[in-house]
Image (tube, rainbow, N blue to C red; front, side, top):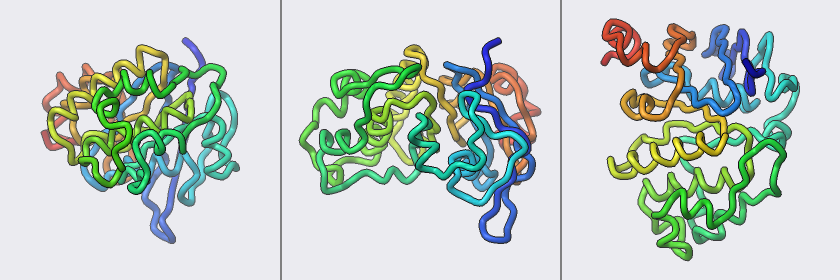
Length: 237
């Protein structure tokens, strides 16, 4: 077994005085796709933000590629190759597709797949058809693809994807699943926050189910999808 690319042990997090994560532990191996599942408000997005140092948090262990990141600010963690695709996209609406991609450009990084504009257009053919379109004139699904592509231009070793299937058309969801599987094929490590179990099952090796800021299930995606009682108890499906 290779050493974890991302290791989290007893992670707690707060918004102001309100504690929202309680001793969350998870591990992600190199090249693995791991899903964080749970109902709305379970703590999935907060877990990602806490890993990135964007909320108040403490942890017994918080390491990225073997390096302790507990005391590092978010920008330092990002520079190490930990990418984040936020749920609310945050593209530059007055810039074109190509200009948005240029904003995210970083030099190749050792141990990470190398992404270029042509390879990203191959990954997201929809974007290839609109290189000069302004971000503000794109559909929600197209903006979601652009946000992922812009993050990949930063040459990350790990990407945290927050709700990539939320609020987009089924045809875009299917394209996003194909793209995540291709990222995995190229060796990228992915942590996926999702409410859509069907989507997560298409791309993920393992899953953690969160409820009220705590991990309630850890195991293979195959086990979760085959156990109706587990799905009903923690996901309501």
